[in-house]
Image (cartoon, rainbow, N blue to C red; front, side):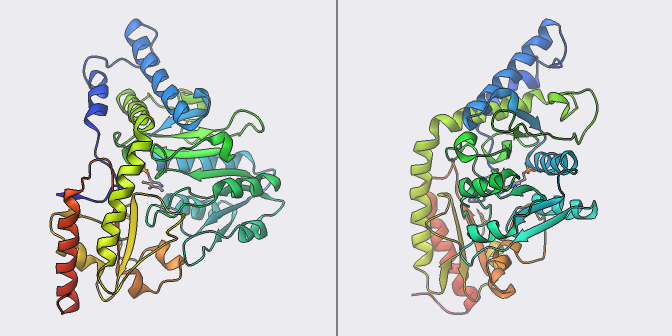
Length: 382
Ligand SMILES: *Cc1c(COP(=O)(O)O)cnc(C)c1O
């Protein structure tokens, strides 16, 4: 299996599993218990929180653990909507966001919030002027993802945060594709809320987290989603997932150490793959190629149905659309928002590379792609 679907999920790094193992076996105490076993679990969680803080440039107490990015997004958006309802009920987001953000917004609309879903330009980038125009005195939150999971397009979040703050709104970013893979400093970028997930950065599934600004210039207020024992500052009750949290922290630390080297190596692989695929006639890249994350290429193959390509690319894992709108028969909402028609959107594949990909794999992928495209188009490629 050649795995080129790293934006859907990544392989657990064996070093992360090793760090988790004690907490899956002998060190099973509850991190809230005050006996020595509990204290050891507590210390392990404390280290993981420090590791996340170091990766993001925040204070450890500003990061809370959740079951993943979806939960973090729900907590952040619903929590803000409730806490700031007396100030306003207007939220701004983007049509190309992950379904987790879009579905929470649709839910909040049923609860009396008003949501503006900004369109993007054909290259997937948001125009700052459209953000500026959408801001209102009752806007409480602007939520724009950092790296798009389907196209890799990188939004100008620093500039967007400035606009949001000038209008008195909070700025949130779903950085699930970016955390651990590119430098992120919540201070420099002006981020108030940020979400991430363990399984996108070579950590385990079922753990993720939320950064909630508690320092100057503003202390974000949040209403809880899960009520109970008051864990995680009362924002997320429930016995802590110690093995998962240890895994996320360790995965973050490994990413922090190797980020620079990996970006260069994976970026070179992506470029090589992309060049090989674009050499096939009737192909083009979707999304701005300059403001784009180094691991992703989303390509349109004229006259080819993406499902047929996925089936035909035996032994190669790629995707169309987002794995997160599971088994969906709808065309990608991201590509539609970029102005494609349905046929075009159904002719695109996303290749997303990661830590465990090697150069040897690429020749096979390009050969297989040429094969299946020839068959689907009914002619042999030169
Ligand atoms: C994967 C992903 C999510 C959802 O993360 P989970 O931890 O699986 O809930 C949200 N946003 C983006 C951009 C993603 O890539």
